[in-house]
Amino acid sequence: MKNNIILFLGLFLISTATVFAQSETISPARKQAIDSLALEKVKDLSKYISIIGSKETQFSEANRVMDRAEELFAPGAEMGVSSINTSEIAYYKVRRYFERLMALNYDRVNITWYDIQYISDLERQPDGRYVGVVTIFQRFEGTSIETGMNYKDTTKKDITIYVEKKQTQIAGRTIEFWDVMLGDVRVTETSA
Amino acid sequence: MRITLITIAIFVASLSIVAAQGIGSGGTIKDDGRFAASTKQLNQFFRRFNAEESPDGNTRFYTGDSLFQNEELRRQFILRLFDNETTGISADLKNQFINQVLSDNYPQYLKFHLGDWFSEVKAQFMFQGKRETATLILKIQPQGLGYEWVIDAVDFGPFRNLFDKPVGDEKDFLHPLSHELGFMNLRRAFQDSELPEAFTESSFSPDYLTIFLYEMKKGNLKFETVSNVKFHFFQIDGWYFEVAQFNRPGFNTGWLISSLVKLNTGDKETLQKYIYGSN
Image 1: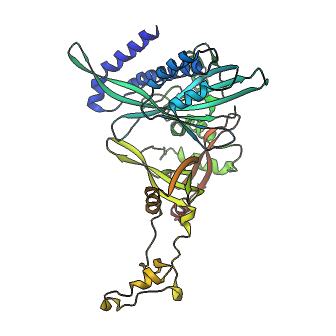
Image 2: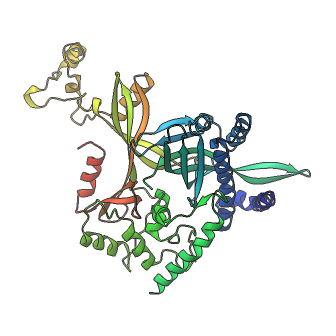
Image 3: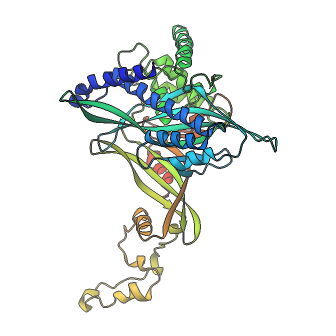
């Protein structure tokens, strides 16, 4: 079902690529299609974070999922993390962030997501690519059986999305389509 | 009344849409309305100020949509775009501002690309073995095929007293016939004086951003982290407001107006100078 949706979105974006190429402006309908594609990527990232953070995930499987998760991101993307106690940002490469998540010393980890997200307008940057930001909220709960400690936090994740026109060959024809890559992610602990 | 009903209808309708679009199917938590109410991005601040999205933020309004830039919706949005918990902006001042923004004859909107707004960013740097705070002013400019944020100015503590040009009798100088001696007395400026800036023209003003970048290129300044971001808006005629982020429990959170000033003639320039740290 999910593959069908992605295929549909892909075809939809391909079919509208000619319009983009001519005007280089994004109509509301096209923007919605791009938003959906971006949300699919963000959902994938959320799913991967839950798997990586779960103590039930075996080391080899977590590494494989980290590889998949890394593929969602543009090269050099970083996670910028801050907590309630300090507004200063700690920077981690995406892979390092996942590794830290995997190494958390809790016996039980539960990562869930709020049923709300916000998607910004797309702005064009100097190289012609479009950039936007998707905001989501995550709930983290970690329990240590030995110490009985139970840690909870809610974080806001502002995720950069890059929207780029690409080309592919289908049956000898060059087809243009728009692809979405994730970029830097700002992680802010909220007071919720 | 009509707008209230429409707002409620959109909000109720959006709840089912939100539930259907939940990020992690199965393990999602239902938002009790706080995250929906929060102005989550500055982009959302623009959209709400202009009434270009539904109350829950799920629907973007475009030209031709019935509620696009709707006056009553804007009024409701703007009232909620103020920090109503800690900032002491009087109700009268807010009303004056809102009435001018929503004026029938000349309604005013915020425009991302228009200029007359900029960001003030506090960032930490290591300089000469000490952690120092720099205040950077960034603004949006057109570049290539799109736009970019650029650094317009910097206010950096260690540079603040670097130049102290003397005035009056205190000021040393090169006498007006120095040229006849092939300016051999330049040694006064560059060798004998601890204040070589005394020998510059009356309008001399140091370019701190250039010095900042020079120190960085020399490896003497190292970026550590960003510690605070806020935005200053001068786009509404006769008004200035500041937008800051409020991360706290409740429904009045996110990017909100933290300061509002009615401007008289000359106030805009004075305020900008103050924010730029050159006052």
